[in-house]
Length: 218
Image (cartoon, one colour):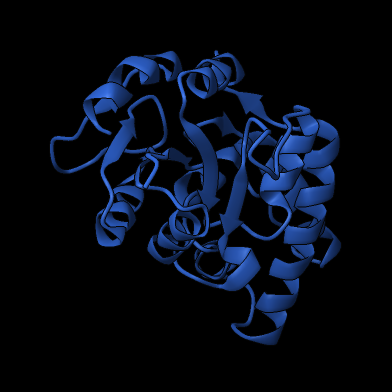
């Protein structure tokens, strides 16, 4: 069997920071719904990486759990995608340049996130990153919003779907590491991101470090 090495990436805190614009978009919908509340950038950073239903339970404690909370979450999710398609977020330095070099090095690149459907696509479209088949920079994506599967399940699903013989996951928070371990793959910590890991793991202090660190992992 021909060797096929894959690098699977988290989104928030790993390749970009969209927290400021996500907070702005959510505040619009929260206030339209009649709540005198502001969703802050720190609020968003504190929950990034979690499934959307968990995020709603953590941030929308002033709503009634069930229909009201779900309706507000749905409204925020949809408007967030529209807003990010237009305004984007902050791309970490050298992400695209490093991806291009990794692709030339023979690695296959993917994204798996706990986000809602359309979020990864909004990121890719805003930065005009080609994706969707083996000739593209990002060959495939998967997320919680597409299938309601947990991150470990989506990591395995994507690896199997693309016939990877070896792979690793790059993420920034503890739950990324936990999911990767559960999925049975090695992990690289994006140490510049939103969180820490409670065990020693390979890490990158900036995105461009990945070309060196990946050789030690797969």
